[in-house]
Image (cartoon, rainbow, N blue to C red):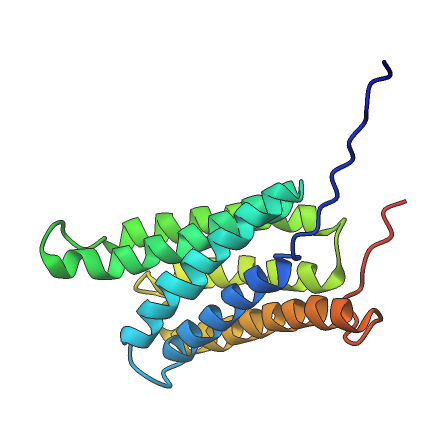
Length: 196
C-alpha cells in the first residue's frame, strides 16, 4: 500500500494588520498624552491592556502558526511591553510595591530601545514601511529614556510628537497590508523588499 501524503493548507487570516494597528493606535494615544494634549487617563490604560497588549499578543501567536518568527517575536514582545507599562503605572497605586525610580525607568526604556534597534535590522529584509516604524520606535524609546532624566524634561513634548509619527506609521503599515490584501493590488505602497 502506497503512503498517502496530506497537504494542509493554511487558511487562517493574516494577523499583521491587527498587530500593527493595535500597536499604532495605542502608541498614538499615549503620545498625545506625552505631547501634553491630555492627561494620563483610563482610556490610555485600557487601550494599553486590551488593544496594545492583548490584541498584539493574539496577533503574535497567530504569526507563530504562520511560521513568521519575526512577527511572533515582535507582536508578543510589544504586546507584553504595553501590559508591563500599564502595570508599572497601576501597581504602585495599590500600594503593593513602590513606583519605579527614574533610573529604573531609564533602564527599562533603554533596554526596549536596544531590543527595537536589533529588530530594526530584521526589517531591512521586509519593507520600507516596517523600517520606518522600527526606526522611529527605536528613537522614541531612547527619547523617552532621556526624558526620564532631569536633563531631558524639556523634550517631553517633542518626544510625544515623535511618538505620534511612529504610531501613525504603524497604522499606515497595518492599513496598507489590510487594503492591499482585500483589493488584491497595491492600494497603499509599503516598499516591499525583493528578498532574492
